Image: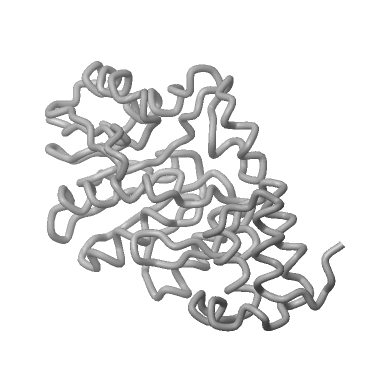
Length: 270
């Protein structure tokens, strides 16, 4: 058993034996020590806090780093996260970047299934002129998103409810969403048990929520408005078909950082 007064270097060696990714181990130890990584490298013989080793064991068991620290960076923001929300991924930044290109000055934007509020808050931070509304079915998730907005000083209209239901008869210039899209039989789900299953998969082939949003979003889009959807790297063709069937024009897909097709959108002709 590692001593409660193990040094930084000893815990980094322990992390290697446990199979913890080095960058995760460094990030956790920096957080646990209240220091930056440069300090860790210069003070490897310093004793680590007693709880630092327990955190490494939790990482080795598959618990996400963000759940240990309580924070996750996303599109230049630092967001609070809890097990009630999906941890924002860098892949989703492609959706934000595309939305920022298409959103008109002073436009109205809706983020459906907002979770931690990552997309909505990133859009508002980059474009204060936008009027951003965000919905989520989970009261616990919406509480996390609302708290993030307050802490960051960003005003978003948070609404409780499923997808488009809280929007009434309102129309928007842009609707964005990162819905559950992992297929129910995907083996990767086994490694994601620390996040809400309903935010990861709708079951089946993973397309159910994407199909629902493609079919129902037009009644909430202004003529010329856009719908942008994040999806799995192998679902672009299927989502393009869904949008085309629903009557969207200019349907296309955009890649994530790794060059994989990650989001698909189309323009509603009205």
